[in-house]
Each structure stands twice: as structure tokens, then as C-alpha cells.
Image (tube, rainbow, N blue to C red; front, side):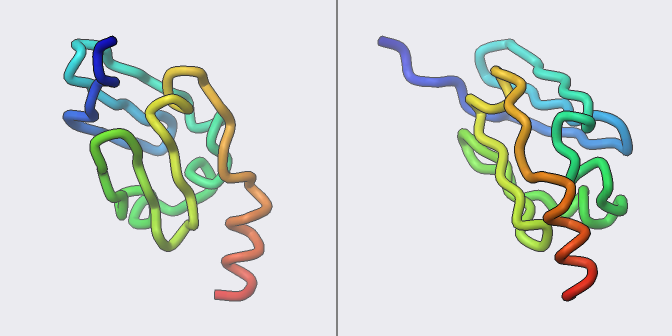
Length: 88
């Protein structure tokens, strides 16, 4: 069994998340699938930690696994960022 591919690079804009894997696959996910990132300001979106198999936005309390990227899993509900902004 081959190990899962690793994340090589990422790019995030106001409308999409692009992740390049070492398997040669590039995943482009509309931010509508990740409401927290869609509603975040650019600085919050860009403050991303990249690990071998996942992405993390500390201030947004948002995580995206490699598996989630490949399956289009919707994560980090929009209500989370609204609550965070009210309390933060």
C-alpha cells in the first residue's frame, strides 16, 4: 500500500483553495465548501499552517484534512466565525 500523498504547496484566494500534492494531483476547492474561510478576511485566510496531510487556521479554529480536500468535505461551519468575531 502506498503512503498517502503529502501536501507540497497551497494557495488561497477570496473564492478558492488550491492544494498541490506530491502525487501530481492538484485539488481546487471553492470556498463555499468551507464557509469559515469564505467569510474570513484575507489576513485570516492567509494565516494558514501547512502540514504533510492537513491544513490549519489557528485563529479561525479550522482544520482541513487531505482526505477532506479529496472528498469535498464541508468543514468549519460559518456560524463558528461569526461567534468567534462576536467574542474575539
